Image 1 (cartoon, rainbow, N blue to C red):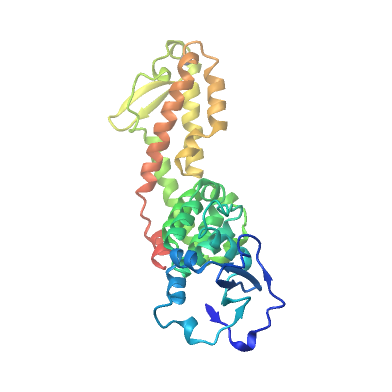
Image 2 (image 1 turned 90 degrees about the vertical axis):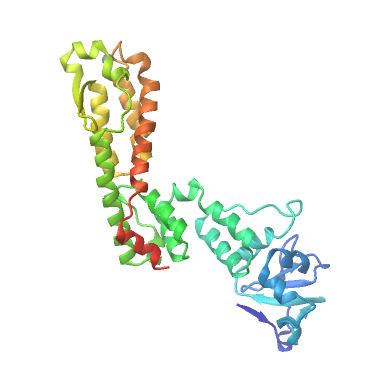
Length: 329
Ligand SMILES: [Zn+2]
């Protein structure tokens, strides 16, 4: 992992210094990236952030660096690490005060996982914890769930793999697009992820068709006299929990049917309150004088409860073959 360079490696002419603040000639340690960029770092700051480097740099005990005839450059000890300069710069930025260097911005999930791995390797517990919070952000988990899942499995992070697996439920099973990170996981892992999706589909469908979680009978679509008066504007819905059967406005019956299909295909709570479905439903509701005024607020409230019921149900799914994904690591 770390090489203390021998005196034979004295030629530093082909090594460039990193940009500010890692070109400070008063800094006493050089970390040399595997692509030959030298980062001049203050040993004290490095030791405070990293258990690994604290042990290496400790002066009051015999250490690797003292037992080798090591390379120095411009008066600083050189330690070669096996990280590239982009990863190293982002990692070291966390060791310095914000007044000197900004926290790194991560546009790509891959780079984020690489820096986290380096933080773990060097015993930078606080940095690793912070990076794990970043990689759990919706811009990675929700926006690119398959990529996040594959990277989390590849990097042996079971908690993040479980979170990403849940987010893949927002993608239809048959329309998932290829991402190159899928090459990092096995066919077996992919199969288990699909089995988890199918299990959640069944559960979500039961929530959408059972409706026992509905706790109010006074929603406008249950009570609208205009809709009830017109046969073509009403329908029946069965609520199985206490075997109630209610007349429901046709526009709401359409919503329930579409939400059932959608959430069976994409079994995660937010599916039932997706903007397209809500917009189309409210357009129809607005055509009824009775339903119109209350439809928007009540449908939003209803869809929130619907989504929560779906999310609660899928959170209880402990598909045995899915758990194997996590147990493998
Ligand atoms: Zn109505």
